Image 1 (spheres, helix red, strand yellow):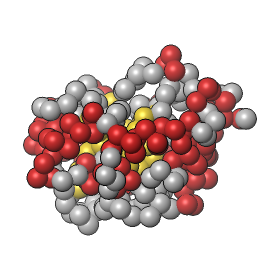
Image 2 (image 1 turned 90 degrees about the horizontal axis):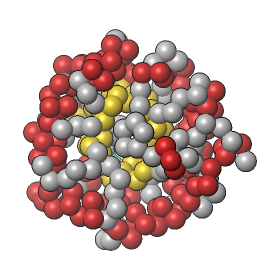
Image 3 (image 1 turned 180 degrees about the vertical axis):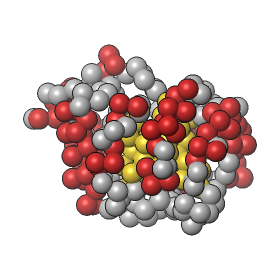
Image 4 (image 1 turned 90 degrees about the vertical axis):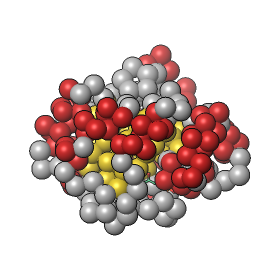
Length: 245
Ligand code: DX5
Ligand code: ZN
């Protein structure tokens, strides 16, 4: 199968999103997710402008940092993200991802994230074409494809994004890009296998994990589903953690 031959990076990561957590018990939820086998923790920062919803800022990231050593995957859904990067890195964010649509000076913003000591990621809304990545692919440790329109948890996965993930995997192989390919929005036990087959390496899931009773069982089953995509043997496990993880 074509997927097994190219330059395919490291192992799969399952990344619960705290957007679906009980905010009144945030520390307990983070610990439960860590014990359940989460690889990273995903933090959705929303400003009420770039997206209609408002969530939390650097103080909450700091609070999460104080209870876990897992990598914190910080997804900035804010206008002018460059104004806030330093605060999030200081709060303990390991990966900081910004939206193409929110960054007129995307290249500089990504370099700023790296200069501050975090791993830069770039995110594309469902309607944003892959060619917007053309001149920044070398700058990032992570590319994130939104498979819902950002703003809320629990939305339905947009099936039309599967060919986009597949095309991105191809583009990354052609460019010999070793960044993670992260997918965010509407992921659950029933579709992670297909998303893995399309070429994703990192699977964000909010309601698909936190909406279930047993986080550990769900994460374990997700790993099994992903391995059934038949790609596990083709991923270079020796590379695990070479960039952000
Ligand atoms: C959507 C956020 C996602 C969200 C995913 O705007 O970026 O990270 O938490 O939630 P689910 O998995 O429930 O779609
Ligand atoms: Zn997110």
